[in-house]
Amino acid sequence: MIWNSVGDFFAMGGYGLYVWGSFGVCAVAFLAEPLLIGRRHSEIVRTLRRQALAEKMELENK
Image (tube, rainbow, N blue to C red):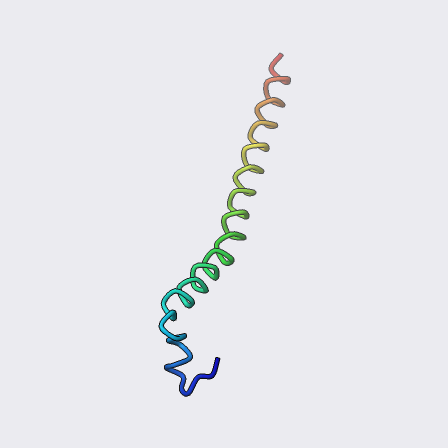
């Protein structure tokens, strides 16, 4: 496809909103995924440490 101007490039033959919207959604997903995984990992580690401490304290009290 040949574009005569930057405006034509961004318009993408009338499909610009779909094309650039798709790129935007993918970019947000690619950026959010590692952040969400990191937060979930921290929550799991915190929960496991809390459970291990509770088991240790329970064994010491017997």
